[in-house]
Image (cartoon, rainbow, N blue to C red):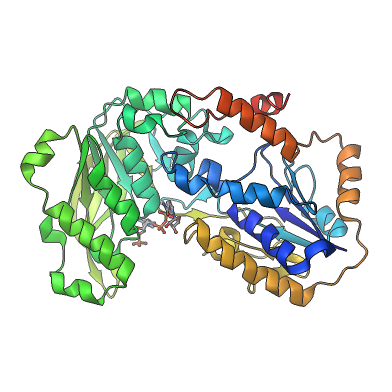
Length: 433
Ligand code: NAP
């Protein structure tokens, strides 16, 4: 019997479990660990609360978790409660599926001012991650600046722009729902350091901005390159740029009818965040794109604002003793092999790129590498882990416990919402009954 431990119960972790089941059938046991008492990682705390259909993939993960040879164990922090070395002594393979939970640092003066947040914190706050429940962003000013032109920037801008009605059917947590209900933000500026041809936003997500109840997206036609140049773009990006062109064609009278404006500011690189204790403006330098890179022109201006959310990408947390690629912010690996018996998958392996579905082939690929390397070695696996956990008095949360927590979250949902998540670890644990 082969024993595999997967650290992290997000999409990469669950797809790895699925791939291992397909690879070894009844000849493997798989333990999936999570530091939270609840599973699914980014599906729960990263995917936007108004994108419920994407969250539906959790049903597939549930089927994996309920297979005989697979077990979810929550409320155990690998690296604190149990070390990686201890897991390695018990399992034939340990797979790091720990994602990229930290914001890439916005390394400019003033980034530590009040009401400046990274997207990990801000998205975690509205999605009910216990670590960010106390964030308390202030929405009393009228302008927010969102830095970055990827899908996370789009998620953040859309959530800031939506009406209470539009958010009702989402699983945005109560503290965020209530705070946004009172929000006075009326202008959301999305800053991109490069141009329309360099955005990372995908067409489906970008197109949503045109269908908001009270907000309209504004693009300055002069920022767009000649239409003929779009032909050289790959098809997805070309579609996104077509959306930008349609935003540029929205008449002024339509913007005037809308309560909220979402402004795309291209060729705009943040140089400093200004303010006395709290953010008051972003200092921006105009750029030109040369050979694909943003190059400052020396021209600067101030974008007044009261809230800044930096959506510039994520990085993994290094672990002492494990090779780490500092520049890329992920584990250093060869096709997922970090060290003998130690692997990484998903964002921990390739960095924060792709959609949820990208993690499936990624995980299957790494499991193929594992199959080349691994042979059963008589390690104790789950039985050994349970002994160790009992000796340390760890309060493990099982998948059945999670189902109780899930039911409690569904039972307390506001009208029209699928669930009201617990945002406190103790409350989650209490809810398992
Ligand atoms: P991303 O797609 O890599 O976009 C990051 C953006 O930040 C880019 O526009 C980048 O500009 C900009 N940026 C980076 N460093 C900067 C700096 N120092 N100053 C100014 N701008 C900077 O990252 P993301 O939006 O965090 O998304 C992460 C992954 O999750 C992506 O694969 C995304 O598609 C995925 N995701 C998918 C969905 C969905 O499918 N619905 C939703 C959310 C996220 P440059 O290009 O110039 O570097």
